[in-house]
Structure formats: C-alpha cells, structure tokens
Image 1 (cartoon, rainbow, N blue to C red):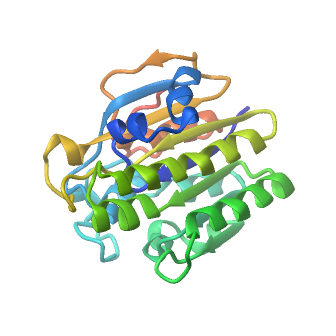
Image 2: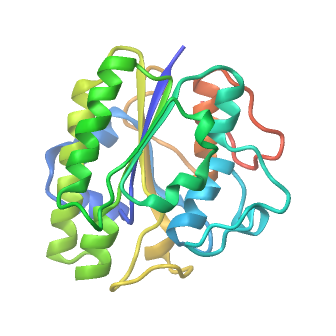
Length: 256
C-alpha cells in the first residue's frame, strides 16, 4: 500500500514548469503519469481551488468563492477528514495561513505554517520542516504547499516574467529535495491550484485554468500522458492509493 506526498506550487502554470530552467522540472513528467493540460475550477482563486482539490466538488457546491473561508452550508467530508476515519496519519506544511480551514485540526497528526508574508525564504524553510517530519514519522499523507510562486512571482512580477520563472525554479529545488528524501513506498504528486496572466488570475482564461498534475510512484507508469484530468481528481486518487473509499459526494475520479 502506498503513502502519498502532495506538493502544490501556488500559481504554477505548466508552461512555467517547462520554462523555469530546472532540470528536475523537465525530468519529473518523464518519471510520472502526467497531465500538463489539467484543469482547475472557477473561480481560479487560491482558496476555492484548494477547497475543490480537497473536497472534489466545484466551488458552487462547497461554497467558497473567494479567499475568505465561510463554513459549508451542506458540509462535504474532505480528503483529510476521510483519511482520518481510517486511521491514516496526515500532516499539513504550508505558507499561507488561510489553508488551515481545509480540514479539522484534530484530524491532523502535525500541522505547521511558516507565513510567507513574514518570513523570507518561507518555501525553503517549510520544505526543510516537511522533510524532517517525513524522515521521522513516515506519514501516510502529507500536504506541502509552496506559496512564493504566486505571491513573490506572479502577483509581484507577472506570470511568465523572468522573476516568476526564477521562483518556479526555486520551487522545483524544493520538490527535488523532497523526492530525493522519500522513503521507499511513497507516491509523489505535484500540482498547482491555478495559473495566471499578467499579474492576476481568477478568470476562465486558459492561462488561469490550466495546471500541471504529475503522479510518480509504483501505481503509475512513467512518461504516460493522462487525458481529461481536473483538480477534483486528486482527492479520489490519494484515497485510492491509501486504500480508503471515496466520499459519495466527490465528483472527481481516481486516476489509478
């Protein structure tokens, strides 16, 4: 049975992954089953996209339409809450505090936030902490969020600018370090919540809606292109890898 690490790079466009100049960013899709034309949800905004990733429904179903969290009117069990029902050890490592509302705190074995607005090099620091935890605790599921690509790259300097690509490159430094540190039996999934254009995102433009999803592990054939993938497929896929049944309301499909 697999264990899973999910790394999300906020605002990473697939063409940004290809153009960032890091060798592992080019190599990783060849090690993975991948969809470099996967689709996110509307509005293509960070918190709604994360809610759809972890709850496998569209924003009009979970009710989060901006970066302000509001309780669900008709609650849907999320990925971590479902894994906790089956005694899976789960952890969150992130750099944007609003992500704390993606799951109930008592369903996490460990949670750590290093706020990117108050800490230089927050992505590298949270990666260090996540690697240390993986080596010590070998969790069943760990979510690592890298936020500098969106904030320091896209919004500050513009998507696909030189500065943006530099931050994408730095994110892949972090991803490669996690990959090299993983114990045997782990699947590593990399993705983004949305893309971006100019210095913004949130529209239904292809630049905002298209994201990369790569899945590297024993259950996936290397260098295999996947069709019709959406961000809503991630939660069912993680659950399937961990031998946990999906929640009946989930709309995505398992990619295994």
